[in-house]
Length: 285
Length: 213
View (tube, rainbow over the protein chains, first blue to last red):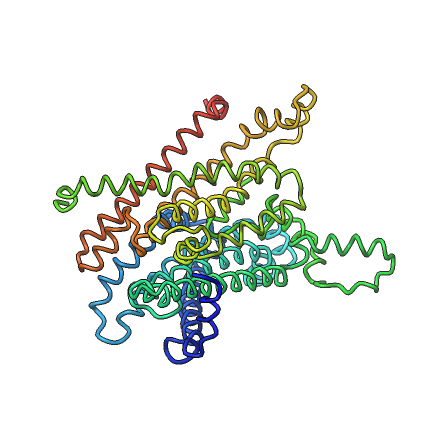
C-alpha cells in the first residue's frame, strides 16, 4: 500500500456521498460523541460538584475511577448483549452503545469536577461568604472558576475516550467512522481501514486541540498564571491604561487568586491528562 | 463457572499472551520515558515540546493506531509487534509526564545536599532524584498498566490472540458467559499488574516504610 492508494481513496467522489460517505460518518461520530457527553455532563457535573462541595460520598469518585479498569470492549459487548434484545427498534444498536459511552465518560468528568471543587481553599470560600455572597454566588463566582481547569481536563479525557470507544462500537453495529475500520476488516479492504483510521486520528486530534484552546481561553487569568504576566508587563509599561484588564472581577478578589495558585498545584492546572486519569491523583502534592 | 473451568488451559495461555502484550510495553515504555522525563524536568522549554508530542500520540485511538502502524513499520496486520509498539507509545506518553513530575517533585534542599556532597549530574539522578521519584513514577505506572490491559483487549477485533478473544468470540456466539469470563480475566490480570508494581515500588523505597513505622 502506498500513499497514492490512500490519496486515491480520499479523492474518490464515491467515498464522499451517501450513508457510507465521509461527511455522513464524521457527522454520526460527532453526534454520538456530543450526545454522550451531554448526558454524561448532566449526570457527572452536579454529582461531582456536590461531592466536592460537601465532602460526602467520596467513594463514588473512587469507585468510578476503579471501574475504569473494566475493559471497554468487554463492557461494550456485555451491555449490548443484555440491553440490545430489550429494544425492539432500529435503536437496538444505538442505545446500548450510547449507554456504554456514557458510562465511560462519567468517571473522568466526575473526578475532574470533584477534584476541581475539592481544590478550592476553604479560606477562599470563607472569604467569599464573609463578603456576603450567597451559597449560589460562592459556587458560581468562586468555586466554579477555580474548578474550571481540572474540570476541563476531565472533559478533555472524556471526549477522547468517547471518540475512541465510539470507533470500537462499530463492532456492535454502531455507525460513525469505526464502520470503515470494521467493514474494511470484514471485506479485507485494508486501504479503507487505513483511511478510516486516519480520519479517526484526525478527528481525535482536532477535538483535543479545540478543547486545549478552550482551556486556554476559558480559564480565568488569575488562575492560569496569565494575570501575573500581565501585571509584570504592566509594571514595566508604567502606564496603567496601556493594558486592557482581561478579567477585572476575578483579579480584584485577592483571596480567590491566592487560592487559585494553591489549587492549581505545581503540575499546572491544564495538565491532568485524561487517560492518566484521575486529576485528583495527579493533584496530590 | 464450569465453562471457565473447562477452558482453563485456553484462558491461561491467552492470559499469558495478554500479560506479554501489556507488560513488555510497560518495561519498554519506562526505559524510554526515563531519559525523556529527565530531559523534560531539566529543561522547561523541552518539557513543553516533549509533553505536547507525547500527548498528541496518546490522543490517537487504539484501534486506529493498531491499523496505522503496519504500513508505517512494514509489518503484517496480524503481527503482535504492532500491539507492542502501540502500547509502548501509549506508555511513553503517560510516563514521560509522570517521570518529569516525579523528578521535579524532589525537594530542592535534598538536591543541594547531593550537589554539595559532590554528586555529578548523572550520579545525582541515579542515586538521589530517581529513587525519590519512585513513588510518583510507580503511581503513573499503575495507571498505565491498568489502561494497557484494557486497551490490549481491543486488539482482538483485528484478530490478535489474547484475553480479548473471549470478548469478541462470546459476542459473536451470543454466549454471555464467555464475555464475563473475558472481563473477569482482564480485571484479574490488571490486579496482578497493580500488585506487582506496588510490591516492587515498596521494595525500592524502604525509607517510606521506616517513616510509617
